[in-house]
Amino acid sequence: MTGGMLRKMVRSSLTHVIQRLRYYYYTLNGYDVQKSAQLERALNFDRYNPAGIHIGKNTIIASRVTIISHYLIPLRREKTYVGKNVDTYVGDNCVIGIGAIILPGIKIGDEVVVGAGAVVTKDVPSNTIVAGNPARIIKTNVSMDGLYL
Image 1 (tube, one colour):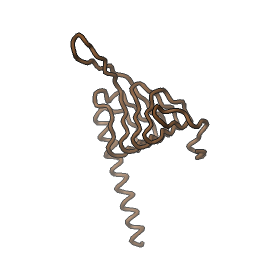
Image 2 (cartoon, rainbow, N blue to C red; image 1 turned 135 degrees about the horizontal axis):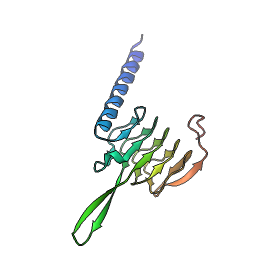
Image 3 (cartoon, helix red, strand yellow; image 1 turned 90 degrees about the vertical axis):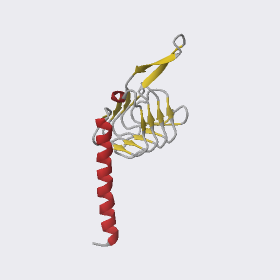
Image 4 (tube, rainbow, N blue to C red; image 1 turned 90 degrees about the horizontal axis):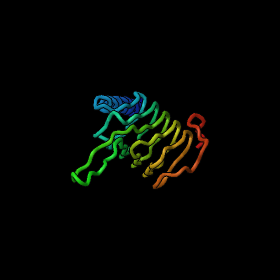
């Protein structure tokens, strides 16, 4: 076994361990994350309503993604805010790009790609690619299995 092969095996093992630790961290904090999801670092998941965030199977969430699961409603007379919990869903086999923002109450279907930096303000149907601010559909009928991107 060469040094390069050994480094690759060690790196792969460490990556697997880190992914498991992230999964346990988020599930123990109340988030609904499927075990096969891959979560990168520096995620900004809503801490006010963790049970309202649902991440599907085989979904990849890249670094610095923000997912929100509550609305803040201003109460002018009391000069304060009240939170309203909602559910925010990311389907199975999705890829959420670096720095994307998913607003509260959004439902992202299965096999969706959300571009880096996109701001998702509306529900996204399955088998689509969205990008931009606000996120717009830029391609439909995509399949992750066939890699028809």
